[in-house]
Structures are given as C-alpha cells and as structure tokens.
Image (cartoon, rainbow, N blue to C red; front, top):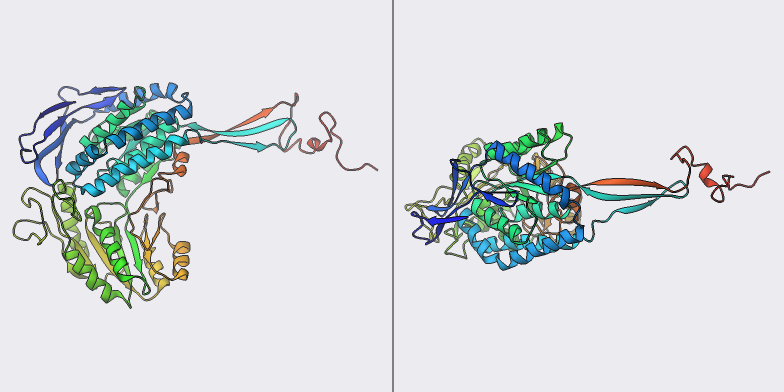
Length: 539
C-alpha cells in the first residue's frame, strides 16, 4: 500500500491511499492499469482511495489462487478455521474506530452508524468463531441391519462475492466470514465507491494470518471487473456466487448461476412498507418512520418506502412526521456526530433521487408535502452543517395520498423518499403492504395482539419488526427477502451455512452381505443377524 499527498484534501489533512488487488496473499498493482478513484461525498476534492481496475486475466488469476488454496483450506479442521475467525474479530475490535472513520469519510455515513456497522462485523465474527465446533451432521437410523447412515456438510469451493457501497463492512462480513468458516475460499469484488474501506477490511484477514489465497480481493467497476467475476461461473472457476445490489443485476447473475446449476445468494432491493394502526403510539411510530425513511439518507435496502397509515390517525401522524423531517440535521459526518444523515454516496445516487420526482408526478392523487432537492448555499436548511458547494447533500421528500398502484409506490428510490398511503383497516393495510413485487423488510406499529398476529401471518416480506423500524438486523438472525428482493437464500446466523455448504450422505454397511434398501426390508425383520425369519408366530 502506498500513501501520497492528497492535494484536494487539505481541509481533511489526510492522504490518498494507493493500493492494488489482493491475490494469493500478495498486493498486486499492475503497471498501466486504469485506476479508479473513490472520493469523500462530503468534500468531493478529497480523494480517499485510488485502485487499479482488475482485468479479466487478473480476476481469473484470483479465482485460480482461491482454487489452489481451497485444496488445503477445506482440510483444515473447522474448529481451527474458527480460531482464525476469532482473530479476525479481535482485530476488528482493535481497529473499530479507525475502520469506522474510513467508512464515514468514504461513503458519508454518520459516525454512529459507521461504528454500528463495524460492530456488526465484530458480532458476526463472534457468532461464527464457535460455529466451527458446530458444523453438525446427523446420524440417521437405517431400515436394514448392521448398517449406519450419516450426513455431514462439505464446502462448495471458490465463492465469488460482490457487494454494494452502502454497507461496505457489514455485508462483506456476512459473506466472507461464514464462507471461509465453512471451508470455502473467496474472491471478493467490493464496490468501486468504497475501495479504501474494503482494503482496510481485507487487511484484517491478512493480519489474522489466513493462508494465502483464502481471501482474495479484486477492485473495479461492476460492469467490468464484476462482470469478469460473474463470467468465471461459466468458465468453471467459481462454484458459488453471492451478490448484494440491484434487482436488475441480481436477475442477470441468477441466470448465469442457474444455467450452471448453482444456487446463488441474491440480496436485492426493496420497497419496504411500514403500517401504523390507529391504536399505535403515534410519537414512537413517527420517530421510527423518520429513521426508517431517512437514516443513511434512505440508502439502505431496508429503508422505508411505503408508509401505510390508518385513516383515523393519518392527519395527526403526517403533521408530526413532516415537522420532524423539516427539522432534520444534515451535514458532514466526519465533523458532526449528531447528524441524521450525511451526503449521498455518489453523484449517480443524487441524480437518481431527483429523477424520481418525475415518476411521482404521474400519480393523479399524490400530494408533495416535501420536495427533496440538492442542497446549495441558497437553500440550505437551518440545521445544515456541511459544505454545500463540495458535498452531495439532498433534503428529504414526502408524498401523501399515494395509491399502491402508482409507479412511485412500486419503484425503489435509493434516497430519502417516503410515500404515504392511507387505509381503512388492518386487512387493507396488509394487502397494501404486500402490493409490490418486493418483499424484503416490513414493520407495523400497533398495540393490538390481533393486529400483530395477522401481520406476522400474512405479510409477504422476509423480515418484519413490530413497534420498531424497518432497518433492524442482528448478526445472528437470517437476513433476506422474497420476490424482487431476493431468491429466498439468507445471510447471517446459522441459516447462511446452508448457502456455503452442501449436504453429503454416507451409507456404511457392515453386514457382510449385499443389502438393498426398500427391497430387503422384510428380511431385515428377522430376530437376529443371520436369521431372517419373520417376527410373527408361525402356524
């Protein structure tokens, strides 16, 4: 890794990180390769990292290095692999503040959230370090004599991991840690917008002493280096792919994996609903909706999209919700720890966010209560605390009287936008919540046990909260969705182990003769070995 003066970063007094790919335990920085810069979205002149874009040949080299390492890593006892994970967790705890500040600087996430994200990686390591002693198989009784049946898990091989920019530490930890714990090796392609924090995270695995080739990292854009990694599935160099990102790209990856008879792990977009019933604690629900919709600038796959309000409390709720949204503190997260959200991650997210106003305008009934816009010196909110000329800041958007069939209610907006839909009762509320093609996260605010039961039973999302936000995810619970939000696979907890292993069954026959299942069952009813007489009285 190389450090140089950062001419645009005088305000931050930091350096520009120059680095290369991690392949077979070595940092490689090919001469003449196109380099991609990641910048601080709060201060665009501040270049955080500059990394080479991996060629198809380099991506293949990383896959081959992983395949070579797999031969020995899969034979390493699982409890020993768990000890490596324990070391990763220890180093993450030691480097928590450093990683958090790099994360905040590179993607604009508030420090409180950045620290929480690194803590999630720490929690993931803590959970899986002991799973090395619990990769249980099963013994199963045979229908035949002197025969044993058993099952155990086997690793898959080389895992291609492709992650997004909004959770550049937590989500990779969900993938890398269980994958290598199960005996696989990995090639990770992080987001081009979060390269420096990815390299810092990769250094944790190097420092933990993992054998060369177990964890490999290639940098570049999704359309180039990411595509090259997906191409390696068809080339037989990858046995598993796990992707977090847009539904559109996830569908393409699913097609490639499907024709190779592989099961991909796809964690995709969401249009997450929150229901607020007439018996709910309104102030609590407003606070939950504010963080669900505007935390991380709405740049979470679990961010609130459709806010579904019972008509009896809708006016009261909307009044409080809009007032609180107008009063949010937006600003530079590196210097202000009490902000609600910082800048959007990149210019493309700003553009996409603003373009959705045109989609909302197609609705016949929708009323714009707050129209989000790019912050500049002339329109900065009262509590704004950043450099409007240098950062990618936007204000929140709220639309009321939206219908579930409106395009804006069906479209994921990767930014601080909430659409409000009013309903008459719990049945209409749940039908509305289930009224999109997505099915990731969901929430309901209610104190009625009947409403809670109906919601848990009938909601179509993969995850739900009751009297909490749409965002919460703990490291030992399954994370994932249905429909356009994913293909049913899960991240985190014991459930993710199924994504990185396959079951192997073994028949052990010590009878000394040929016994055939299903065909020789009647003979097995004899009273003792060698005596195949039935256990029913004769005569």
